[in-house]
Length: 326
Ligand code: SF4
Image (cartoon, rainbow, N blue to C red; front, side, top):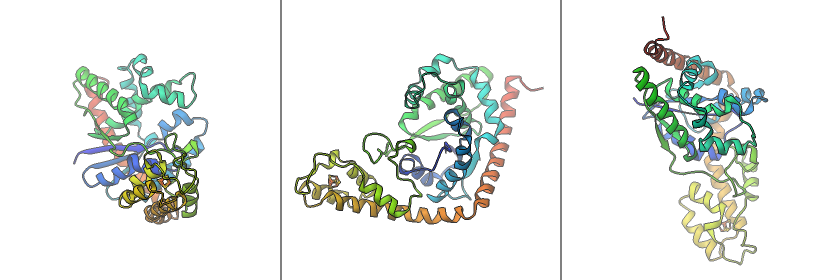
């Protein structure tokens, strides 16, 4: 079975943007691939090193979110990044092959540094694509599901692996990217991506009334100031959500909006009901794990044990080829 490495930064609960961009695909692929879910707590430290308590509590939240969307603990392996020393060792080896220029010119790094307001980057932040390469390759993953913005990182990973294999005769697998075909989900404000820090997100664990309230406040076609005026679904963020989450009703909603036979309040109610029907089974699953945190802990520990076994075996071979073993 080929292997997938995917995962999340534990910096808070996961939202619909994560679900559309990555989680849904994970659940669909879990039967075809050996799926490792990395809880990337070290990577989270690159931006949240002042707030490690948040990272610690989010390890559970993120794992429960993954379980709630239907990942089967019998099939997938949860891995806590900080507890896998082979990843840290590989990061150091790879860092010898990457220039500072390569990293500072990486478009994703530049955008993220801007988003975080960094005028100067720490060594850890600048180097996180190198650490990400180690995340992917410590277990020889074949495939990495990513958003479009992560493609430069995967390209860099492939370059590092090629160079490493050429230099040392290792047989590390060059990972392929699997881009989500749904793309990025805008936040409820319609202006930017859905983000934890932007206050425009619907969380997978939000209660029904919170979801309904958030959808009620969502931005629509701003030119539609009265229910009697026809709307333009093409510029309406609420309609984008209908297209993604309410595919059956979307064509009908589109024509009713255009001929002004559906008002925005009613349209949002339809969306909120649909979202709540999707989220309801997830809330149910999550509530089981919320009441059984010991089960969640055991899943992470057991998965991490397996990851260490795989990583240690691979690293021993790599070190041997590099002549850094006795
Ligand atoms: S009716 Fe629906 S699709 Fe049309 S503008 Fe209002 S919220 Fe958007």
